[in-house]
Image (tube, rainbow, N blue to C red; front, top):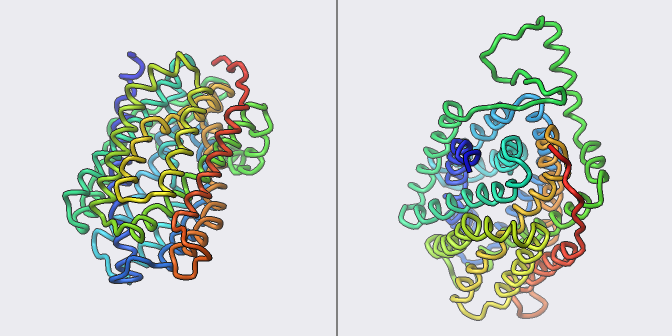
Length: 433
């Protein structure tokens, strides 16, 4: 417990970052629709642009996540965290200034470029930071807590967005993102050990090095070139053990479903039940509160009793049920009931990360989390290519049959594949730190 208290500054950094990111989620659909299809509840171009954005971000993060994970193993978590914490301020700052069609396209370009580098990097590096400081026996609980912090930020952010105008939502989000970056620089302590158990000089450092400038440059270039072998690292990592291979398959199909649902659900609800920003926020608050309670209170109790593999299967099973309920929603109340399943399906991601974390040594935690994030990025590429056209088709007048939720049901089948794979997951004994 004392070690968890020592992570308080990391928890606050993650909270502020997630607050800023999630605050704009309820509003972005309305902003996109207003810019591209003003006055309409159905807009195929908005769905296609969202899908293209997700695919491009997936391509970028596929390369960047293993790279950032490797760099953080060498130069320190804090130094690498600085990049996404600062860059993510820019897109929301653009919409905080103006939300006309011209500014929306400027935001769209910057969002893609920055997210190709930064998407998911803060949670990834935060998990590696936790693994540096928490022994294996308490790692699943710690991962659950950090996910719970993210869920708490999600609840607070969407609840705040519920009572703010669209303009104020983006302005407050930008301010919180700035506060988060400043807070991290002043309060978050950095410590990373390399294979020889010596501290490397971080990229951003105030310490004087005892080696010569020439040696320092050669050493830096050596580690940078080593870190750039992202694809080779990705392939060798997933082939290193059966457990990691199976966990990667589970992560891929789980994220394939998550990305598909994220890209389709809001447009489906807007077309089917005419939801707006406030109703999106209400739905997210319900889901977020359920997830926060589960990760902070229920998961720490169940993880030691059931084990991560069983808890993973439970989470993925209810993930399937959650999606199938959305797909057959016959009333505007059904999505609210379905959101309550968050109390059970939020187990999946912390469990996957904890299982993988225990399969590598203490000096490869950044690489491990980066590689899992990399395989999740592949899902970010594939999912919109498959599900965005399907969603656009079944929400249009050209649908081959009247079933608006058909694409979400297909997404549910992708989640079912991850559930079946999780049932076959064999967890090898952990590598001792």
